[in-house]
Image (cartoon, rainbow, N blue to C red):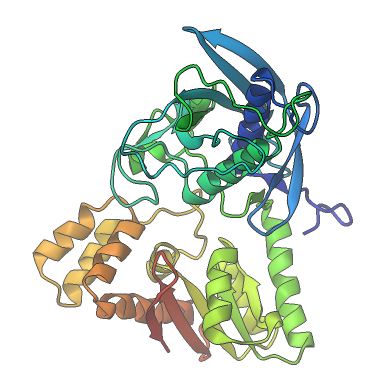
Length: 409
């Protein structure tokens, strides 16, 4: 992507990545306070964390401190989010984490045990919680269950892995070789618990600028991210990237293009279609631009692959699919369902759904691919209407887990 003529747009980091870095710093600080020798600075000023793609990124720690609250020792650390050149409302927000030792509750087996080869006492189970400024999910249809903090699955995994790294580097104690029991005031060895609480001090105010309340996320923002990276959303930069992707396909001698909203759907599309790498182009939220550019550059066949939310927007005639430009009306989908022969009970269920994902899950659980195929046919109809040209179009609609729910031509 380019900013102006030569300067590339800066990528940024997601709230999930920032939360993971803050959590690792807090865990390191707590372990140092407990007398463990932890690799790195006495008070962490930078921490490095793993990303989902296997890379590693170093984050600057904004502030860190030890707090004593109700006789408990709490380590706190925070990171200031840098969204790069993306106009993200959370850019500059402080993402914080607290780490403290607690008592593990009997029966909570979902808290995974971490084995430390150099410590006599097994290290803690990790519990990740939402604090001030992190929203709580109150409606179905999201990737997080009702009642849980709005920390999406990938950020949750990143936080856990970052904290595990802090623990595994804190297994030795200075002057006592490689064996020392860790003193846990609230839990007898060997069942300790490490509590990590993620917070966003101004999250409640920031949430007012999002659609969280409509989605049923109350009290703060969501901790998001699928890759850890924020891609700049400048229109000129993104459309230029789409054009370059199409040009590369043409230069490679291809006459067909696979458009996907993002990297996750692109990975599924690569597995399904097995085409050359140059055939895959991420269109982001600029579907209309992508389709028109492909035709102008001589592409003969367009594949469009994605989950129900983006596909339904296109089916509704919205070719700029970002929430800033268009919103998905579930009442429209309910109306289509009636036109396709579904009864009013199903139509009502669609209207009462919270998200397109909830609608998708509903029909997937029914094993009903007719619904998805009907959406796919409508997508093809709308694209052909936009292009006003007879061109081969194939629409593949995926479930939230990447299963093919429709493949129509």
